[in-house]
Image 1 (cartoon, helix red, strand yellow):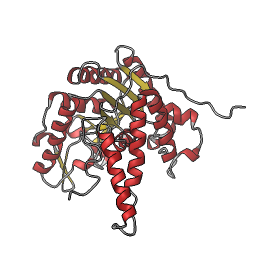
Image 2: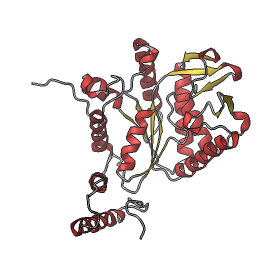
Image 3: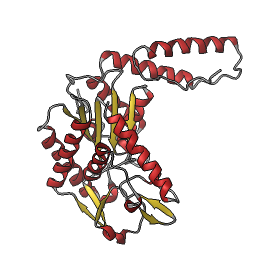
Image 4: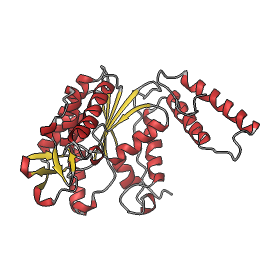
Length: 323
């Protein structure tokens, strides 16, 4: 007897290899997945603009990264003693224009260089809603807690969604190496502040647009993370206390589904061993000079050195203090 409807992910014919560079952009769910990729010591860059949610703003960021188009002071606004970019997350805010610009443009430079070698790109959309900043007639990625009277909120049209996604793919295919694999997901995090019916409409529009666009390209995929949480893990025990964000257990379940479909056998072994090494590194003895602990460290260094042979980038490079 079955008590749940399991969502199965079709096995990908193209696999993520241990040496592949993976670029991730999008919502906080994207941060969760890229964090696990990084913990597994896969070469990853996540959200050089900070977390983003709607396809229009994500496309704006990708275009900037593609063109290596730096921001200048005219692109910024001042509010509440902070100098901010409405295209960026609040973590880029500072008290002075040069500090904000330095953080922003460093991220653009880093993202541009990384994309030129990225073998995989993961894009996670969160919402079809967008805000227009009325003083500049500008569609924005983040409102930075500026009063609502300065914004107009609306749903992106089906055409705007599809056009944004299409242009994102074309720009990524242009800057990334030939054969780059682009994996789209829709975040399972519900935007309940929009309203429950409105959130369902928003997610539905995203899913429809993604499926329409990826059919027009080779090397584009869809990871059903939203469907896994909504249909497979249909229980509030798989949510955090806010009943909105997926729990650690749910993230791990989606991660395992993702890995089974997209990791090569070598990558799976590589990542799982690095998880074990990471747990071992977190061990802190009462006596650092204990011979058994020193033997444990030497064994750990050997395991790390063996992992290093699989990839060109450093693995656990800062795990041990330099002598």
